[in-house]
Image (tube, rainbow over all chains, first blue to last red; front, side, top):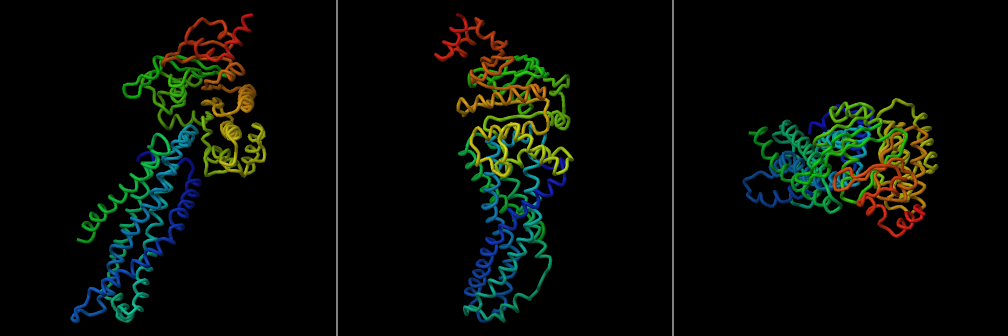
Amino acid sequence: MGKVFNRPEKGSIYLTRISKEIELIGINSIGIVVIISFFMGAVITLQTALNFDNPLIPKYLIGYAARESVILEFSSTIVGLILAGKIGSNIASEIGSMRITEQIDALEIMGVNSASYLILPKVSAAVIINPFLTMISMFVGIVGGYIICFSGALSPEDYLEGIHLYYNGFYIVYGLIKSAVFAFIITSVPAYYGYYVSGGALEVGRASTKAVVLSCILILLFNLLLTDLLLT
Amino acid sequence: MIEATNINKSFNDNHVLKDVTVFFEKGKINQIIGQSGMGKTVLLKSLVGLHEVDTGQINFDGRNFTAMSFMERKEIRKEIGMVFQGGALFDSLTIQENIKFPMDMFTNWSEEEKLDRVNFCLSKVNIPDTNKLFPSELSGGMQKRAAIARAISLNPRYLFCDEPNSGLDPITALIIDNLIREITIEFNITTVINTHDMNSVMEIGDKIIFIYQGYKWWEGNKNDIFTSDNKELNDFVFASELFKKVRDNHHK
């Protein structure tokens, strides 16, 4: 870890690499985040509406419940878990392949701090871009819930009223903090597994699987810890 | 000159290098030979610091490499070029970007100067016009040449090659050998080659070090091989019928 956060050899090259990683990790993930978030928001709204069958409970609370679910939990955690699979396996296999084909040794021989050169831009890019992805996810999730209202489960007016109810800005901050922590996990854990892989293609595959599984477990664990720390 | 004295290296209980003392001369092709699994690659990787030696000392022109910190070693590593067995070109970069990489990292040259140097290196290894290609688009021999071009891009004082001929046909292997010899002489580099290709030894070897079961078993030049009575060396070098005939002809 110390090697990763050493002072970079040449700052301008690292900045270029960070911008490339932002594109790879962030921009290229927008599509999947939008799709997942839209359906997630729609399903949460639909399920909440189906379960709020007591006539004494105001219908606008469905919109409120959907908003809180999306902002507090789903946008950061579910998107984090999905990205752990997409980005995590990619990072572990990319760095692992570089290890077994001696490309990392080649960097070291040149006098380049390979851990810093390969891992730091990925971690930095993910920590920068993941909160933006989470914000997109929050917005699209809420829009998904609104659109499903036209299926008749709930009136769009009630949904919009619920969306505006008891707004607490810190909940968004909390979601963004979580997403930044998850971004660190889904890049650093696979990078570690890839960097220290030895053997051949089979070991790279195994390292990739292990990295994704551990990332998911750590996301769930830190989700609990951060919730306890920030909300209670 | 590179001096390695009393080098020992173990991996858990496996004692791979046993008190190896070798000197690699400047401007010459120094070849480490031996069977697979005898410690050649471990010795080569220990010399460049990819493996930390357990005991012993490695000096690069009098500079004690083993005693240096990570940051101090970086300065020496900038003087080292290395050609790996598989080329180890960065597969996400084009050939031009691969060769330019060390310049981007360690020089303040202008883009034009860097491109001039890239083209010079590519013409030196005789693969011009491959600038925009990716490593996967080149043949094995061309990848090795590109790897040599990258290794010499910053005018190294020391060139290490790990089995540069492996997987190549005899003609391409000969071209690579001659290329390494030409570069070594022209730039007065200390070149260390790890090989078990006896054609290469006979072609370009100035100084040959035979590693056997982790020990430096024998050293000499390519002519000494024919007169040596070292059994293990003879068993290794003259294992094939072809080389037995070469020896017999040499003795006639």
